[in-house]
Image (cartoon, rainbow, N blue to C red; front, side, top):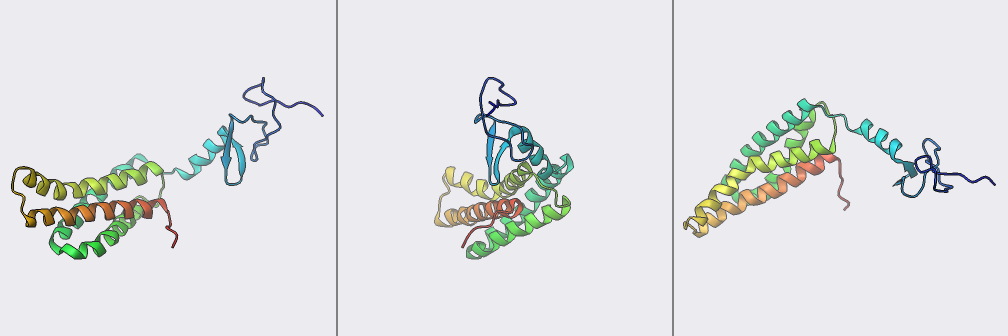
Length: 171
């Protein structure tokens, strides 16, 4: 039997091959995937297929996410308890608007940026009542005024991200 060596590290013996390009790879060069081990070059090439977002998509996602989330947070301040139902719906609607306006292009960075934009759009509606509380105007109504936008913020951000990233929660 002949001895085989890693294509990237010629001083390391190996019997492991990339299941895509059949190149010999050592343990350091191997990337474990659901379908077996692959070399880092094949993994990088595969990721480029899935990351299709353009620079314009990032701008669109940020602006749309922040504006729509601001509207949602404003409504959440007004409807109180029903924010529990509105926020996940708003997050899904924001995600769908972003998805359609970006031509369904994908990138993990795009999904994270959209979630940050949703958070920033809702932030003024959380920060203004908090500033009022810190300045000494803390009454029960002020505390409640912070509660609903804060709930909106957490639910809308998470539902936007999960919807865009395509993550399905198991039941």
